Each structure stands twice: as structure tokens, then as C-alpha cells.
Length: 598
Image 1 (tube, rainbow, N blue to C red):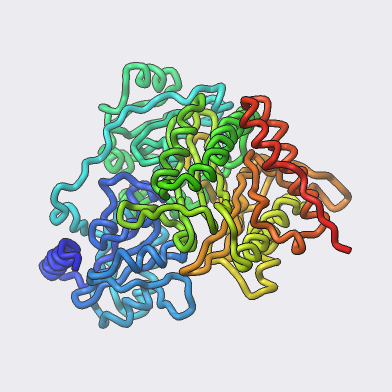
Image 2: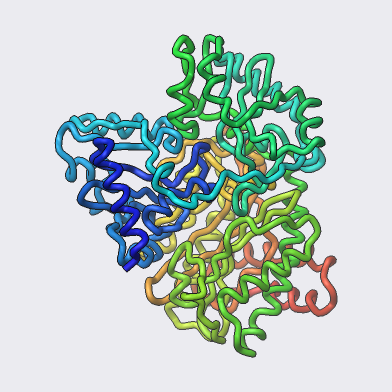
């Protein structure tokens, strides 16, 4: 039994009784509504023991449950064993939503507690509306972790650094001018930004406050005449202070943000309710009207400028070199014995760290061998780590942060002979990857409209995967960048030239194997006709796709042609940077395949 989790839930229930609360909700987010957050705000992990990046824990006086998506079903089930929490497999038809479950658990006039600091404004609105239909009330005034979480990690105080214009491609002054132009069109006098990647992008600054993400804890408030950064001043060097002064950015304490919003005298203020916490929203001067809109910074940031595109391409070459060195080393090392999921993760990181401009990994590597590959976001631990054998499939999802770009790549590698099922499923995934990579589409299409390309071949056999097919990738920023995505559920953000998107279909057979093939892609122009402007994908990722587990009878001529063309690009761009031995290995890994269907 996980006694520490049991004791925490017991303490929480005592707190709830003392404050007349009948339930409490712990989301995965922080005051900046981020996907990845500093240790200080990992309250959901603290109360439940589940450490995935997505999930919500709910505790009532009698029950407890945790909702997470399909990426974490297997991991969450294992981590929740021996705790008071029941796993709720989110988005499955049989799984009630959080509000449905609370309605079943609670009576009329009960009170659900949430912390206004770590819940997005739209989320609080939704909870109030849905629970209110059953006369259940939401109180946002409580934060039990302040009292109950002993030895809680502090808010990071790491120094921040300048992201040079040669990589950023657009000055702070130009970005602020463009942002203010949008504010003016919306008749807003102020714009509050709490999303950390948007702040880092706007100010051309980077930090190290969040694992794998070059961000720093702060708020930014832009008005018609001023721009104020709210940050703990211990994080600022004299160079940064001078830089901010030169860019006409005022510096105030992180804690001053509430008072500033309360005293703001403008007529209208812009904020994105999806990534602005309810505490900030509820403290805006009530003489102000509030405009809810998708952050204009998010929509500006996802269109990459020429310097950022150049940075991606240079970073992808260095990342490809590291991947080639790793892949050449891998199979012989596995045959020699003694290699495990953790050891190969460390080896790949070593190869990346040798590259110029390397800063960090962009997320924790997923190295899943055999049945571990079926755990979509598997991360090996000393308890789960297994030795690799010269047979079957290894799923390797990894990436790096370089000063000029962020990488994200998945390769599924045959370490030796594969079963017929592994070969068949690998080829279905490859067909989906190629279909999406080849698609041409009208500008303004949504990611939902393209998602079927990656799934079509496997759908014909009654196979599917529950995660998204693609996401944006930041420019030395977060590896997951939106709001545009490729996935089955509706994603309305229109796709435009110079956006990045990953292409990562997969098949996961529990207890057997997992397969995913992923490239990061750039959207580029294709052609203009009387019907409008059409777009296509250019692969940014440069790394061979393993041809050993392909069932060539399943590929058609066009698919083989795409793979040969991609491998030609990989060889042409990487080989000049390799020594003879690695160049010969790459030539063999990228040699053309031939389809002969008589």
C-alpha cells in the first residue's frame, strides 16, 4: 500500500471538513496553465502519486478518482495501485466526465473546492455551469496544499538569458508593435499574458524553470504605452535588466500582478480564458470590460519567420547526425548484450550533447522495448527497466533543445527478427505516415480534416490509436505548441504556411508491442489555382526510417517513391557531416527500396 498517499488524502479530507467542502479538484496545471510545470505546483501528483503530464484528481469525503487520457492508461493504472484513487479512462464512452461523476457522488447544495490560481478561467466557468445545473456550488477560495504539503518545492529562481535575434528573427519592439496593433483593433487598452511560452517568445528571452522547456516563471502585462514583466528579481542579471530597459519593458515583482490588475484604469482588457487563471480574471478592475480571445501571441508565434526556419533546419542536421551515430551503434551494442532502455536513453543523450548549440532534451525520452512500447508515454525507471534483446521492436521517441531549434522524432527499430504481426502493424503505421506526409490541402484547412490520412490504412482493419496525430513544435520553446493540431476531435485553428506540425501515427498492442513513426514537418506552399492556395508538408526531421520490418507487398509505388525521396534527402543533407564509417552506414540505411507487384 502507498501509505503516504493514503495519509495525504486523509489529511485533505480533514481540511475539507474544516472548510465545509464536499470535494476538491486538483488539475495538472499551474498559475500559467502550462502542460509542463515546475515542481512547486505539481499538487495533482502530490495528492495521487500519478506523475503523467495530463490528468485531474478529484477527492470527495468518501471517494477519490483520477482522470487521464489514453497515453497514460497503463502507467496510471500501475501508479494508482494501493492508493484511494480509481482510474477514470478519459474520453472513453463508458467513462463519466468529472462533473458527471461529482453529480453522482454529491447531493444538492454541496460545495466543490478549486484553487483559483491553478484553474483556467474557462475551466472554472464550465465547472460552475455544469455543477450548477444540479445545485452544486464551486468555491475558488481554497488552496489546501499551502497548509498540507510539507517540504513543498519552492518556485524556481533560475537566471534567465537572452535569445539572440539571429535565432529569434524578430525584435521585441516589432513584436510589441504587432501585438498592440491587434489590441487596438479589439479596442483593448491592456493585454495580460500568463502563458510562459508566449512571454518568452515576446521578449526573446529563455529560462530553465521547467524541465525540458526553456521557460521562466513570470507574467507580462502590455498596455498601449507600457509593457511590464512581473518576475522575481533574483532571476535577473544586470545584463537582462539593461536588455529589458533598452526594450522599454518595466520590471515589477511577481506578486504585484494582482494589485496592478485591480488598479488598472483602462476601459478594456484582453485575455485568453483558456490559459489565464481564474484568480487573475477575478481580480481585474470591475470598471473594465474583459475581452476573451485566443491569444494573438499564440497565433503569431506558430507562424515561423525565416530565421526560425533556418534554425530548425540547422538543428535538424545536428540532431540527425546524433541519431545516425546512435542507430549505427545500437544494433551491435544490443547483440553484445547488457543494453537496457535506460542505458540507450543515456547513450542517445550523449550523442546529442556533442552537437553544437545543444542545451537539453526537449522531453523525457520514451524508450519502450517490446510490450513497453505499447505504453504510449512510457518512461523507464530502475524498477521497469529491461534489457534489450536482438529481436522484436524498440519504440524510441526523443528530442532535443538546441539554441536555434527544438526537435521531436520517433523511430521504431527492429532489433532483430520481427513477428508477422509486428511487421504488418509497422507497415500500416508507415503507410499512414507517408499518406499524411504526401497530402496536399487548401490553405485554411483544419488539422481534423487531415487527420484521416494517417489513420485510413489501419481503419480498414479495425485498428486505431487514441492520441493526436500531430502538434506544433516551438522554436527553442515547448516541444508541444498549439493551438493547431492534427487529431480526430475538432481542432478549428486553420493551417497556414510556415507552421510546424509533427506526423506521428501509431499502433499499440497491449502486452505485445508499440509502433510509432514521427517526423517534424514544415507547412510550405504547393500551388495556387483558380480554387485558391494549396499547401504541402516538407519534412524537417532528418533520420532514416527502418526498412527492415516493412512488408513490401503492402506498399504501393507512390509510397515507395516517397520513402526513397525522403531517404535521398536524409543522405544528401547528413552525409557531408559524417566520417567515412558513418557515411557508409547511412548509405545502406537509406538505399532505395523497390516495389514489384506483378
